[in-house]
Length: 270
Image (cartoon, rainbow, N blue to C red):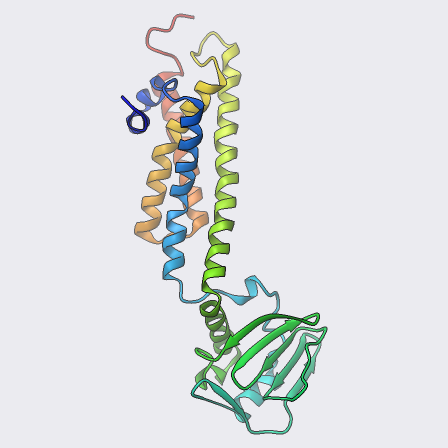
């Protein structure tokens, strides 16, 4: 049976998973590993496509701390946002506190400061720190209603920031999830293969080479990954839950394989 059909034929029965541990060459096993890794990222990609907002605090720590009660009172009483433009009806528009600075309304010659600064300009919110602009957010979800309280404004800022940087944020989430998935995958595959390889010294088991241990581990991991991805897509599970389900199912599949085969071929004679 040609590749990859020989691999998929080994996924659904533990005895076949063990018996077919010598079918793949190294190139096929590497390609299979990359394929399984890519499968784990499908739920992440689907969930990213459905995202409408993402917490700005993930990328800019304590970004909403300067929005104190005095700042929110000033925003609520003196600011009007009409047609995505901010109008400030007061002469006092600079608030300074330990967490940072908040500047409201257009001020000529305003420069970026050392501290965390939220500058509510006429057409956008500019967030800066240490003389560097961190984000420039146009007013979309940031509207009159969002100025009612800090939580509503924080959510609106995060939503507008995400919409303005959707591609970059989505790419970061996929890459970060891919890194975590690759680390978890490497620990599972190489860890299990190594411990299985240690059994070669015992005459009770048929496993003799690292290659067949690696192949057998991939056979055991295929179904758990497929099942965890399917569960994640159907029930909208977060990435960490998907990985946890995958790991648990892999351990159960490996334990079942040992129970059914004792890691010995039917005709094996010690």
